[in-house]
Length: 184
Figure 1 (cartoon, rainbow, N blue to C red):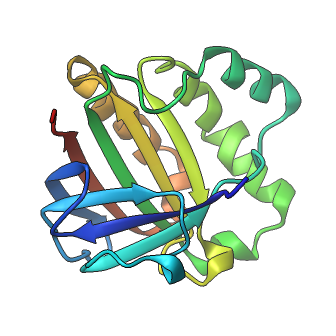
Figure 2: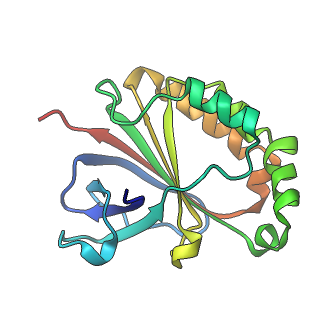
Figure 3: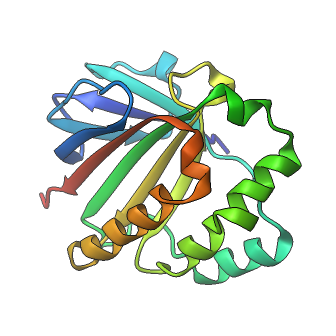
């Protein structure tokens, strides 16, 4: 199973970019479309302005009971009603990466309640985390969200809660790319 994904920003793709905003740090070049493929960038032939890569992996920072709750409530991606999406690339600062795993877990969950916040928005908002740091990418994480248009306000509320948490003090770059799926 290939767990390597490329997010291709450029002139073509199944998702139309409706907004591209730098929340923290340097912006990324705005593109009209985004394509998501389960292929490493080295194997791509599609014309692009930029490509962000990541891989799916085991759930990190979560304990067994949290993973069980997430799996029980999370619905899969590519639901017919989910015509809205967001790609949120995030880079954390050196201070974050200097912390030990248990220190990061304490900030992520005990102080920021990241999983608890996310659970409140399931199953309406589906999500998948892609790890990029180990690939030498410009971002550490690429978070992909999908939701129906009527859940846009809930998605925005989710982001407000996450961005005001202790964990977000360690974010040095974040881009919010909003997307709509065109019905063909």
